[in-house]
Length: 254
Image (tube, rainbow, N blue to C red; front, side, top):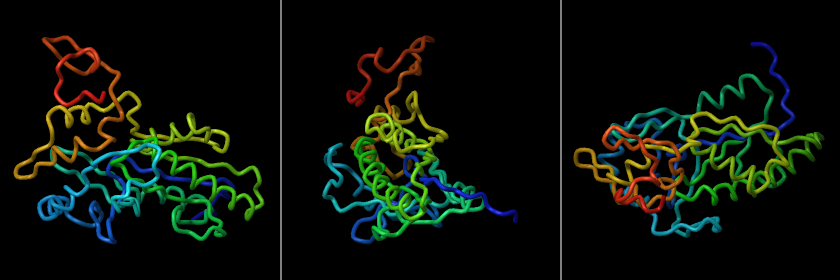
């Protein structure tokens, strides 16, 4: 293999909806990698129901429910009638196979460990603003360490974001002024104009065979973010925006 290109900047991968492993007390509540999705849904229904949010606070780093994101989902799975869950093994390899980077753990590395390639698992149930604030705190600390250790005082962060990870990134860049420390943002599959599937879960719930996750889905902040701005509701042959349609059930948060 040809020599890898040098990388002086710091690269961070942000997953999309459902793309982070969630644990509580060391046990997986949501972790589909290497397992049959249907087995998870049928045998771990109670664990999934424990993901229901009682409340959310965009200013709080932790909700106090003991649930935390620990890793990115590595494989890609499809849950019937629900969502495609994208793994990020290949995305990471695009970086490690082509660039000379040092892998680190964004959450758990010692403060003095210098690395410039990270993955950012986050609690996808929550408000994007909360996750963006966590991202900023971690980047501020890790980027400072990398600059000092590598000697690249002008090193910046490159964000590679999938799906909702792009919305988290945009808030970090635009509202929290992360742009000052950023070189570039690459997004793929980010619902900048909204997600019809999210609206469908709010309005109609989610029930497949004997599995009913309606209450869980409607409790999650991410379902209400992103809202739709395109005309996607068909009424008598005419298309309307969500805000233009009255009496849609369970979509008041939009």
